Image 1 (cartoon, rainbow, N blue to C red):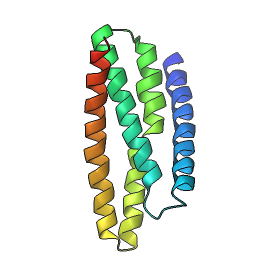
Image 2 (image 1 turned 45 degrees about the vertical axis):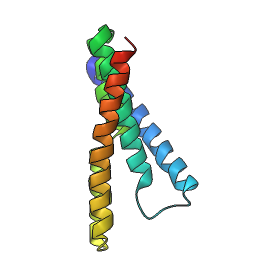
Image 3 (image 1 turned 120 degrees about the vertical axis):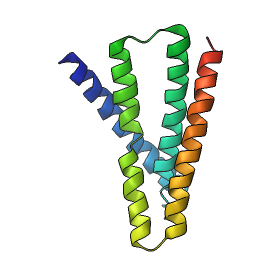
Image 4 (image 1 turned 90 degrees about the horizontal axis):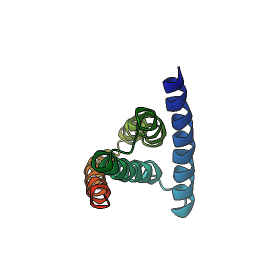
Length: 126
């Protein structure tokens, strides 16, 4: 039961943080029609999870409970693929095919790059 609570608590915090990032980016860019806020959260979350995974693999510092809270809960709640899918569908529904393809492509490419950079940075700090 404690594991479920750890994931739930982390997920709640991650979702609130994602909402904050989305609002902040929206304000910064004057409510853009492209989902930059979700993209920013996903790239940042990918970087964070890469750093933490690199640290965890090189230093063995995360307990099972910490991994549940951080990786599945906090970062899982912060970076949500369902939001990307919904935003992409919204772009497709208004026939913004270039926007939809850009959203998927940037999310995948930048997310993979960020997790790789984060992982290397996390391991280097060991």
